[in-house]
Length: 238
Ligand code: PGA
Image (cartoon, rainbow, N blue to C red; front, side, top):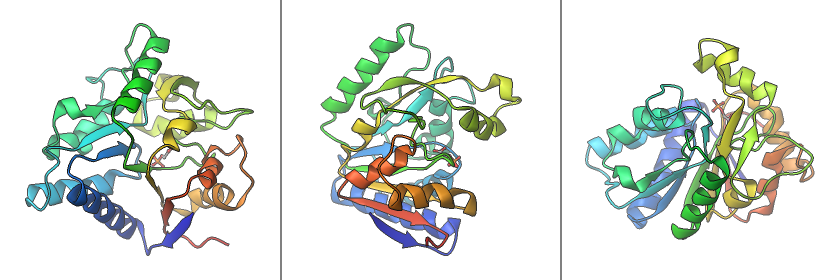
């Protein structure tokens, strides 16, 4: 994995946006793997600016997100569909039908997971996957465990993750306990992976992911198995 240390969050975000814009420029019909959370927000702002200034068009671009909370629909401000609309989709010219997230309200969650896997296969591969990382080393909602699911699955959120995400809810009890998430196997199929990590609180997870053993207890360590991962961070690794 290649590590690029930047000065701060702003520079991480600017560099991530430049990479995404370069991909879209080179291949307008590319498939972007997108993430939610606080980390990619500024990257999305840079993408929105570029589109508004007509430096780029996303008209032919597709996106597929990592995950969605079970029980939340797109009208729910805490849903990841709502997040993506608010922070990116409504500010760029991507077509709604080309943007994909799991349906958190699906009646049959298993069927929804299989639908998402076949959608992923139909898109013929993610060209560039943007990732954040949890303090516990999770990727998407692939939480630390004894084994990791390769395919899209319903994940039980760890208490660590629910507590971290509770900042976006009015109370911890409102944070869903489950989410639909791409599995590590799917994530590792992307051609290029860009992992963003900002702040000292992420340092230990990144350190373990990069230099520890490949271990389901640190899902991000599976990125070591991928040939093209770039980590953009604003701290020094030892
Ligand atoms: P964050 O979350 O960007 O809000 O820190 C990242 C993650 O949990 O994957």
